[in-house]
Amino acid sequence: MKSTEEKVLEWRENAGKTYFKEELDAREPLVREILALKEQKNAILLGHNYMTPDVYYGISDFVGDSLALARKSLEVNADIVLFNGVHFMAETAKILNPKAKVLIADLKAGCSLAESMTGADVRALRKKYPGIPIVSYINCTADAKTEVDIICTSANAVKIVESFDSDTVIVAPDGYLASNIQKKTEKKIIPWPGKCMVHELYTEFDVDMARKSFPNATVIAHPECKDTVTAKVDFTGSTSQMGKFIRESKAKEVMLMTECSMGDNLRAEFPEVVFISSCQTCPHMKKITLEKVRDALKYEQFEITLTQETIERARVPLDRMLAVV
Ligand code: 13P
Ligand code: SF4
Image 1 (cartoon, helix red, strand yellow):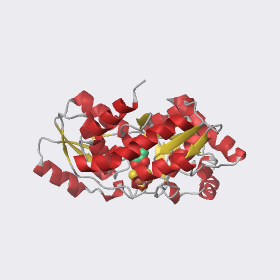
Image 2: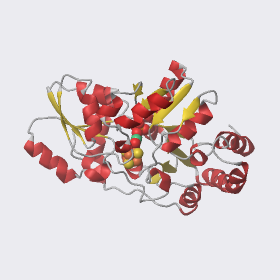
Image 3: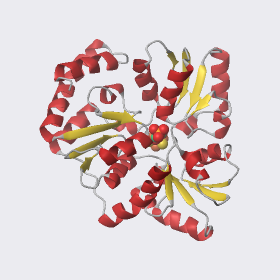
Image 4: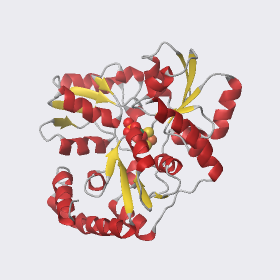
């Protein structure tokens, strides 16, 4: 196991690819406090790939995309699980690990997709399209999860849709993810009109400009971008698949069409790659700061609470997804 000094050094080295020395100096006491509180309270920190580098490196026990974090939530054995990401992700961790005290550092860290569809909306969809399976992106509330047939993430969406015999499948709440899946399946996809407020900002013009200005750059997008945008890029995948693609393709120059911190974190992981910034900020992810992480551990706030019934019903579509991939 690494000592505190080793962890702090690693944190400085990686976060130092983004922050000035003075910024690191100012934040280091918080990192030390967080490391001490983690030990004292037997807490595990899970972090999404969109966390800023100061939260992503050094203090996290495990980082990844939504699928990897869901899998990890199942197996962690700790008194406290602090989820550094957005609310639906922390809820998912609670559903998968109901015995743990699951915390999120800011309850207002939401998601435009999760907020676009309620459980009642799913019931109405089922009434409108009887017998058609309903796949929901993991970016939805626990309430919506209780009503759907199966969950998918950006890493496994096509595989999940293909797992049904039915030739028509409803994909909600991300309309752009649905249209990106439609390009890769023979099945008829019925979408829901939700959007990610971050990825919907990318346009075809952005890709054309990138190609003109940086002809050697490999352009990578998230499947929450419009299908007209993903049609023009070199690779589309989940946040973790982006890193894997860079590693395997050995790209030298990369432009990412996704949330800003993704580029910052990958810059530390791939120092030999030039990352061209074309990022958009997720105001929800950015609510998670070192100060709030420290307070979350210190005061054991803010706890995710769900009824037993919600946990049991929302677990069903998550387990079905985890059984498919
Ligand atoms: P990933 O599952 O690809 O990490 O995406 C989660 C998310 O919210 C992206 O906006
Ligand atoms: Fe939601 Fe988009 Fe933010 Fe991801 S980036 S949490 S999908 S608003």
